[in-house]
Image 1 (cartoon, rainbow, N blue to C red):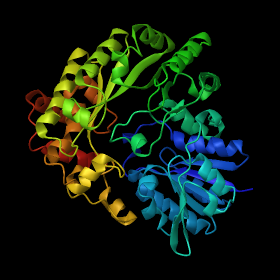
Image 2 (image 1 turned 30 degrees about the vertical axis):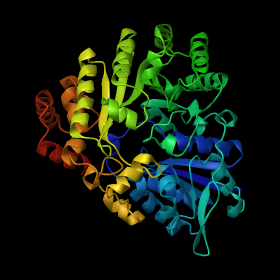
Image 3 (image 1 turned 90 degrees about the vertical axis):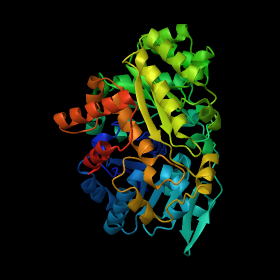
Image 4 (image 1 turned 45 degrees about the vertical axis):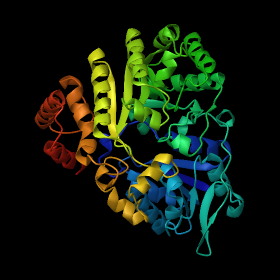
Length: 481
């Protein structure tokens, strides 16, 4: 029987600057393999200091190694792949995750990569490690006789037919140190936002049943290492089927499955009454303390351009409704889209100001710089403006070196106000919020230096003066060194 090693590589900067939840994709794949009788081991390079030693130990007798990666994990993924090949040249290395899905040919051309899984990998990866003929497996790309061989895409799987997470596959120490318990009750999203991976890959919404979700929560509650931890439903959109969502919340209340939990919702769902006052009260009773909204922009034209199907009034209304019931509203924004003018970005800052004036409980993420993914309408606009994505893995590694995110704005030809766009996330995080909230940021730095930076950011935010962001550039080098 094949022995399989699944690896989450470290990011390219200090891991304390990243969310301390878990890779639900790897856990889902591992649980599926385990349910099929495959001997599987997970090594989490983000959270296990001795991950290299564990990889060497496991790779010696390993038939397949699966590595899931985002772009900022690419450098370490290459090093890990080399380490595995050096330890066991017969081990087949399979890459999956966002970066290999979008840049599959570049990844498949690497001598360190034997197979690339595209999109959701549970079924494709299982067929690979089961020893099936690669030419017959849908959803993969591989080399044969020095030529790339690509198979048709695999139909999306049904989460209701997948096993629940098997927590015993994760190292106990990793589980104890999690900030959030991850739960995944659905895959994909029915909406067509032009910037979103789900829309680009056509990942339609597919749910688990309410009964399966309740069973998963019962298992979670029985684990001692999850005691007193917060839970996050990592769904792209938890409330798509409102009747299913109500069954889950009622099941939580009826079975005393009360956790502090958070999830994602669309702002217009509150306007349209899908999530009304009565339901918000039940959410609060079940332990919901935070709802996350993808607001994206405060500019009506940009919201229409990205097919978000909401308006700034929906965003403000959703915050008021959440605050009314003691639930924290959290909003993510982005700027720097192709064709977006500075005055339109300032409209986004105006909405952020309005939100934060409602309550210091409101949380803002971003505005992050828009980053293009192949296959979208917006990507085509970026290409027309002169964008050229890296053509090799080495180019990618060089480009994202010491970067906090997918790519640096400085390389984007469609962005006119590069310094403004790049620095704005920091000025909102440290300048728009209260000093107490800004100082509580997860970014690690000496307290006095952090306080000085916060005060400068607050002055800039008050004056709305964002030219010459010298202190931001210095701080960024300090954080990413």
